Length: 336
Ligand SMILES: NC(=O)c1ccc[n+]([C@@H]2O[C@H](COP(=O)([O-])OP(=O)(O)OC[C@H]3O[C@@H](n4cnc5c(N)ncnc54)[C@H](OP(=O)(O)O)[C@@H]3O)[C@@H](O)[C@H]2O)c1
Picture 1 (spheres, rainbow, N blue to C red):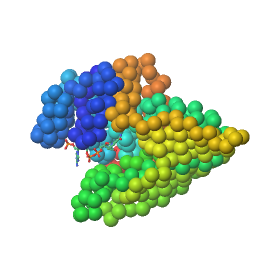
Picture 2 (spheres, rainbow, N blue to C red):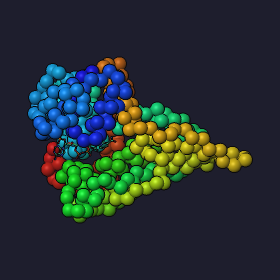
Picture 3 (cartoon, rainbow, N blue to C red):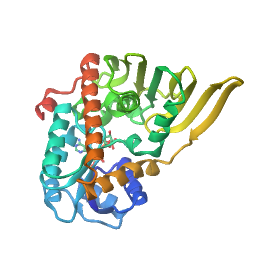
Picture 4 (cartoon, protein in one colour):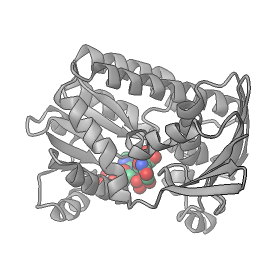
């Protein structure tokens, strides 16, 4: 499958490396707003053609699919453009700003027999199954804590007076959209839709949320989600049961996973998953995307399952945003 990329930052490099590992994916074109940036990027990958006109790329017959890694606010219009032109779309998280946008794109993809998928690596890693299996060993689970607190490399820039995209509400970014989404995915994937959501956030002067907490109440458990871009945590995440505890060092990568089981003679500790390099992490989603796009009818169930979950996460994210007061400029909601 021939694909193009949108965005020329490190995450696109990581995806291309992941696609190489996955196999069956060929980088066929690169988009950049600037010819020079595009050419420099493309030079790393055999000088594939560079496009600076997005519409030309979407209409081009040299690609079958696109990987989108632009700032969040552009995800919806860019995904729509490619789906309208018969191209499969793998879009970075969060794939849309609002659930309404996501619903529209899922419908459009279905109508055109195309795959529209959110690039959320944890869904497509073998470690996801490992966690689900380990949950069965924890006994009754009443408490879980999911944390993604990572000091942003862009924070010094922000403090020095610049406004990087990640702290610019006009880009529909901020901590929840960037890091919190992984905690939401984990909660939804492991425990389903919460019964009640409570959320609060702390804000930078730019208006972007810099950190926050959400509490998900279920019938029999409470899950706490914490996220920050203004400080680094080394604690990781934990799922607590009455027969054991699962420790997950990285909730976004589902790596560094340890099972601690309570036995009559004390605790028994088993390392389930070690550290995994980033390109390898992204190869799972790349492989799933290639597989789904090569046979949308054959993988209808899997594609629908992913879309249902992405939509549920998007709806929950919108609830958190409303409750915590995370607002993006009005024109973003006008994009629908
Ligand atoms: N899965 C992961 O682990 C992971 C990690 C990091 C980021 N992400 C996601 O990837 C996406 C991009 O994040 P990022 O941190 O790479 O963003 P970024 O550096 O701000 O922008 C990404 C690319 O978009 C283009 N761009 C930048 N500013 C733009 C603007 N104002 N208007 C239009 N295009 C612009 C640039 O490409 P050109 O200059 O070449 O046009 C840039 O290379 C986000 O959705 C983020 O959530 C995912």
